[in-house]
Image (cartoon, rainbow, N blue to C red; front, side, top):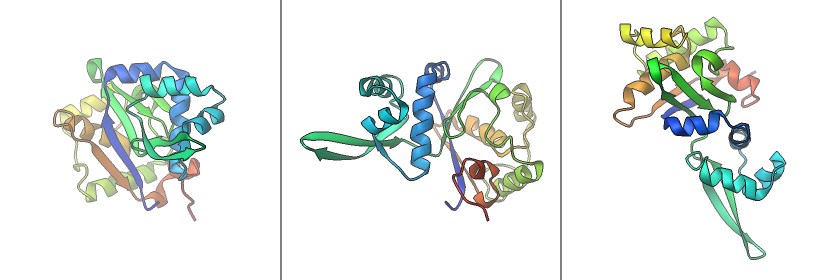
Length: 206
């Protein structure tokens, strides 16, 4: 991969609640997103087998509670049976919604983070201050985020116990600006400095 690409996508609060309180749904998303990042797509049966659950159980969750998170990549017929290969609808997505008192909630399957950011943090939090500054500066130079935050934006981050010094802190603010217009915020960061991507074995850094 040439960069750490993150697309911040608004989600319905009901969707967030249905996943954030359900361990199996989180496990399904974790597995599907990791496989996709590694260049694999799986049939529903393969995904069910890898998780140690029944096929019908997986299909129920995918159809009724996770339908916005996956898509069919291709279909094959084997001995008269149709096999669907599935993958995340957007493998780069971090989903977010905002609640009472401007509290920000996320679903980040690659990072296995489900909850309010003041409690679960973000995938950027384990990077050093220098690494975070490098990524933020890269986003500023690309024109993805402004150089300075407004007073209101700083207040929103403060209410979420965030410093604003991490790339995703700034990304969340930009994503929230675009909610009314239905726009997503896409962050593209040079991945040779991405500690998170290296830690998850999604890239190899020399």
